[in-house]
Image 1 (cartoon, rainbow, N blue to C red):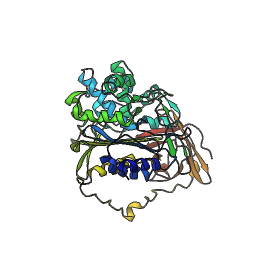
Image 2: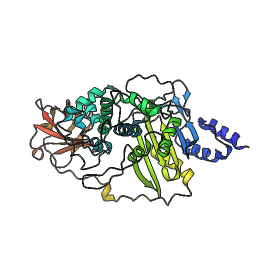
Image 3: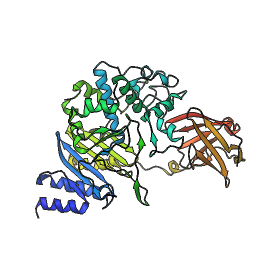
Image 4: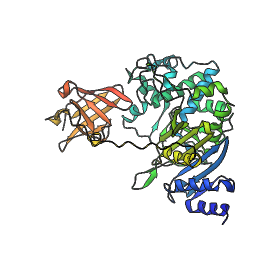
Length: 472
């Protein structure tokens, strides 16, 4: 049986479509198909996978369905929401504006968004590029009000939510904390400086010059992209549509396909757009106030895997997952775009890369096993005797959100700010949820029930004040 016939049979069995390649490439295509075949089952949403070698998209394959209801399979031109892979395009746009003399990365953010003066003092555009701005998470502020990712939310609403903040999470430059807020605000700055939406600016200054005909930034819904793959959630009990009505851009919302991303990837070698100055700045890592370098550059993570230098970024938003993994010294990149929320695109991209680099990779580092002590939950620092004291309605003016705490069957249950969470004692004066994803800290080691301080990833020291009598 010829390589070509074998490849066709593999495609049929796995629901795969492929970009034509030579018979010599068939073993690599087969290896990729085996990797994806372990994950994507017939009739399920899936992934598209591309490999670029020395500037050529040498392998492009698609696995699974683009639209289950319509029976439409994914193909190599299917458009996927890139989620946070979008951040590198925002950083590139910022650097283009700096190159044009229209701004400087060392400008304070309040120069362009004076409404943030209360919480963004000393924060520069460079801080935001490197996730060292210390600002609160706009997504958390909006979802705390009961809004889900599938509901509508606008750019104006997010700016107003951030304008209400009276303090940051941390002073700028002190620490690295991944921040969607930072890149969202960079998108707003680009729009205000250029006089165009980020979508329009990127179309004219990036996508069109690079020939990226199937790439756009979606800042209004519905968009009507003909090649758009639907996003899906896999709960384990069934597969359902999982898409967004949010219109915020900068931190996400670039939609693209394998072929266009191959063109974008190659520009990091040719510097056709932006020149070497901009490309070099794209991969220059940030430095903390202490002088310590971090591994995050401009919308890109810079690192090393098994002795191979890597430049990469992943994305995760509603029913979409993405990964663009570049090995610059090998002039090799792997692109994985999925329309399902259970895809580990980082792992898939690494496994595909291994197909092409197995003779060059160093030994894999074994995972360090955690000790039994590490797995134990921390013992509660207190045991409140009267849980009913903490029931009531609490309000945050900065989040414009309520936390309603009810006593039900001797348990404190939250509605509003953390819908459905069941509280348990944590450190002295604190309650946390079952997953320990957030804490409520009552002053005086729990003696003062007039309010609490809410803490979670991206939202620190957010005050809530009691606004109603406690109830059960």
